[in-house]
View 1 (spheres, rainbow, N blue to C red):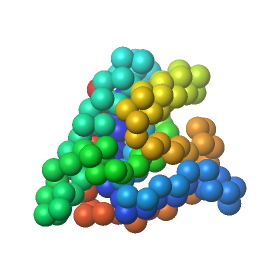
View 2 (cartoon, helix red, strand yellow; view 1 turned 120 degrees about the vertical axis):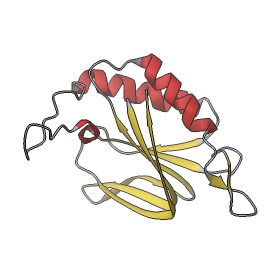
View 3 (tube, rainbow, N blue to C red; view 1 turned 180 degrees about the vertical axis):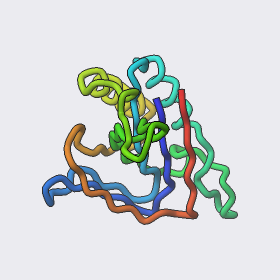
View 4 (tube, rainbow, N blue to C red; view 1 turned 90 degrees about the horizontal axis):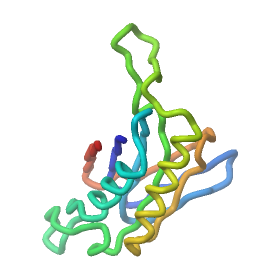
Length: 145
């Protein structure tokens, strides 16, 4: 399981012109799930993400967790995080999980984050989405389990 975390001032996800997820200050989290991932990886990364200290404190130092900063998280599934271009110019997604497994792990990840009492918004799993984000920093962190 792979996360790309971007600290944002705001972020929005639209599907067919309709807003399905919208946050203020916090993290835009792109989630990729591979074939061998399961709920244990989702739980591990939800815990790590909730404690990640990259939100700015009163001195603009990356020192606070998302909860300490009163931030929000927008979680978006993105199977292309497991693109493999080693065999040429056209990406292969052979390592990405099939949609049924991916949806289960993705939803469990969201469930575990919500247990942390952090405001969570989501994209729309499996749909074509338009994402807009105002990056803060920029700060981008990759996590993998």
